[in-house]
Length: 460
Image (cartoon, rainbow, N blue to C red; front, side, top):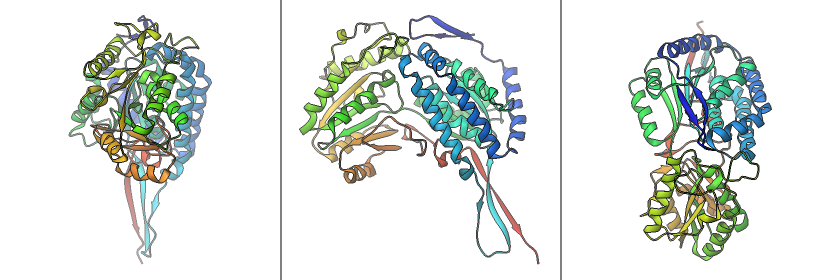
């Protein structure tokens, strides 16, 4: 058994049983059998079932929002955002599937026919985290099913109910038994499954060390993987930025989900001429957050997932202040912030530099460091001074300059005048220690299929 300890009040929210080795083996066998039949169905048939499943999911929006609050602490007023995000991503991947999965015909004057088919890889193991449990899972679940694969879905032990809910929706939509199975699996049994010879692709979202362990487990299996790992995503505010829009967007990018976002804003560089105005506006807006019980509608900043995570951010922040950083938010403004609690007030730091962990090490919490810079060149150097490369953004009204900067920033996604968003039409990918592989967009289908060439020669 394992227990889900709610970040809301520390209570046991639910208990679940890990599957046994025999149950896991049976699930893999059932997935193989179901996939062999499913790959023969048309893309149109798959699309109908997937669209129906997403429709069922949307009908339960209020329930999802409440369960998310209890399991991982996101304020209930924001729960609908994850539901609508699932619909947006899934809908796009369903809509483009026919074209993305179509045969590639070679046109020439040779007698006969040549073409490349996109064949499903087989069984996809999706390992989803707790911070955006539905959004991260749907990135691979729907495309995998649309491509003709079966899926084993393993969610974090903090959010097991999310895996169950997704499986329920697809079952109600008429997806054949065995094609999407939500399993609660230990780390050891996950490794056993990957090494069984029955898993053909692993889609993982999580920490860098966990991603490294996935790669070690995959070694020698000759199977693919997509790894979305850590981030320390930067933003650069130029002197010509629209400050009201920029401040509002970056405050949200830094503190939404209590800063527990892979592509959340974790460090900001601002040209000196607008530094004071930017910081004043940023601090003023940050003070408007309401830290509290995520089940209450007025709450805009919920608890962190657990006390350990909150204490990590507190220690990182305290260390920076001891090294000369200045905290601009008085924690006492937020009555629920207290040591030993996972309720943590947002913090804005200035007088920071890259000798401080808060500017280089992933915080994954509601703290942001803001540095003044003299030039684009200095900002680019600082943005690239990181082991991570998931997203980065520049804030300017000169799009040509933004494009030029974007060419030089080492990142998987580059934004101008927006942040913290996944556009399903664009490849979602990272570089450096942010991982490798791709989900979403037509390119996202490539890893979930393999090419099979057909060459038919006509004899005279």
